[in-house]
Image (tube, rainbow over all chains, first blue to last red; front, top):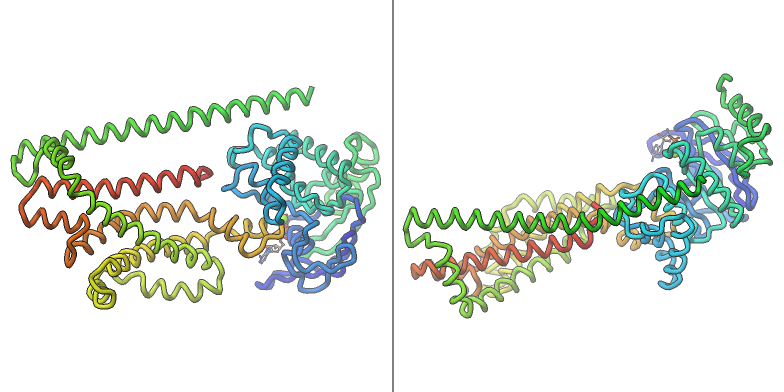
Length: 245
Length: 270
Ligand SMILES: Nc1ncnc2c1ncn2[C@@H]1O[C@H](COP(=O)(O)OP(=O)(O)OP(=O)(O)O)[C@@H](O)[C@H]1O
Ligand SMILES: [Mg+2]
């Protein structure tokens, strides 16, 4: 479980990115965070992951305050965070290597992940030789390799074309069903937030504050896309963000 | 249906990838070798024509030079070894200080200490320090190695430092989110990210190192290619003079090839 208690963030240069943000994410839940560009979504994930200290407030994971990156939390950065100098295999393995897993264990895990993400034959390719969707899947595999109990994702699908985007959303739902990982997913795409998030946190313009928390029980099913409730939720979020219909 | 299409797409990409790898590397190497052969032929021809036209003993024809190079080899060999030892030792010494210091300068705090030293000391023409170095280290190998490594040290340090300062925080955060220690950051991010620049600097340094070697071997010694060249010159033995020059060129060339090998092996991602 993740709990944000009155998080405020002011960068050293005086930019106020977040203001008194509070919400919680239940264990095994997918939570979408949606908000306009520059409202502090990435900042929020950095704080959740322990890479950044909020100027005020605290984040708790399973009741413990977060001060530095935790082993059971994986972060997928905006634009994937892959290393251009590592091939697919090494990019996936790097987290396990750092955390001191045995070589043969890494080998086994990486092989099965490469199979899972459908990149057999690309083990030795570098990120720049891959398509956007393939890179995205490598970033997924790198995060999954650590068997995290929490995954934080920063606009994971935003640079994909519509088709790859839907495929990856389905892929994410499938992974979530298999692993029941707690997921916080940042996006500025309304349909994506509604399709995936059982809870949708709507943020205001910068400095980001919680405008509304929308419960969305039907989410995280592939069929949800075609249901009336889904369209209704999309309209609701659109209204909340202040877009005209 | 959709799955099938995806498999097809993957299969196609797979094949492309493999083709690229096969054709790419072999095709490139073949083209490169052809380029080298061509340029060597052109240079030899120009040389032969020049020698013919000038018909001066100071510009013997390439055939004479090759013959005398081979016959000089037994005498030359010890000098080549001594020179190679001095350059390799110097470069390794320089790298072992310049790379770590350059890399840790990615931290603002350390850079604020390192940078002023670099900016004060780098622009000095270090070669003029030779008299002082000889006074301090004597006329043996130590002073030669110190001089060469000092010059190479600054060249590599400046490059490594600039490259490390330019590594994006994005990659460092990306690694730290995986629970990386400070050492992991050097190992997985700073070092590999800066390696291409460091190797480029090394290529340039090889030329400098050999030029400085020649200078350092030009007096108070009776070993090394610099000595051999100057000695042949003073004896007006032009064939040996050329053998010495060719040995020095080959020395530089072989280091150059080695760096190129390192680039191929470790910087394929660029
Ligand atoms: N390191 C930093 N120093 C100063 N200001 C920063 C820093 N990082 C981000 N900001 C500012 O904080 C605000 C929030 O940034 P953040 O990246 O969290 O927004 P975001 O919601 O993720 O935006 P986007 O949708 O464009 O990704 C922005 O105004 C940004 O300019
Ligand atoms: Mg962002």
